[in-house]
Image (tube, rainbow over all chains, first blue to last red; front, side, top):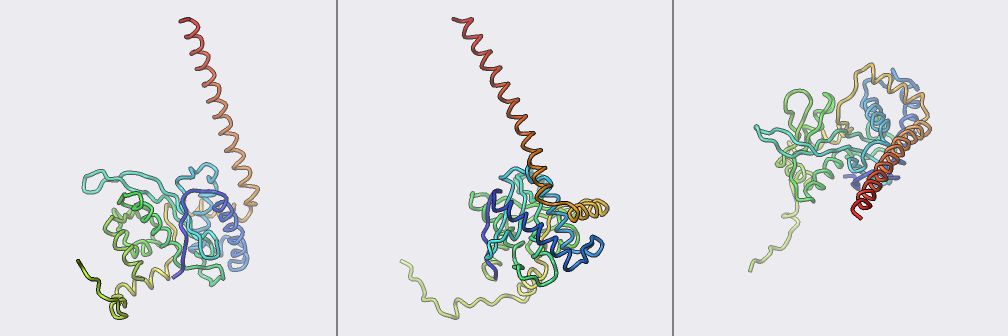
Length: 186
Length: 97
């Protein structure tokens, strides 16, 4: 299993990491998708470029405390998340929750081709980091995110449960414990 | 006083269930994590083309400068308000004196 280090907040390392993502994504489009939009359309890599771009377009305005990331053994930014505290109704009761507004892996962890930078497990590592950070503060808050149809199976395998068919998924405290236990055994 | 049992190779070995193995395999295969809503397909095509046609560093520089400008205006506004409050407090103290 690959090892990742979890970081809280933005900074030079995240900004440099995102600039490198852009550089590599451009390189991959030229190498694997004939340098055009149509050839990449519909791929997970394409969706990752869109998600990354929507984050970087507002990067200067994003509050640092919302940013989480994981770095791999090459010291490359492998996955990035934006989170915020919120509340949701669970069985008619308003409970504290962490909303994962966005997660996006690096382009090399999204592209289907076996590029040398690829390190599997970054997406799992960032969810694991968010759970452990939360528990480190003595809190057992539910995690909430929105998953597009193609990504639901990944979050479902992490223990997230779909709430209303809209793509909203939650990971309960019990589900989070099971995930941590599962990852310990892996 | 409890006595710990000596660890053996057998006690350490964990046998994952077939369901766990299948899930771990799927996690490895699907670990291209993306979460959060995506814009419409039309907007996605526009964003992707923008990504291909824009120089990232220059674009980020423009964005950070625009943000800095906004923050400087906010700072100036806060400083002006601070000054106003200081003047009002000074006036009040002068009347008392």
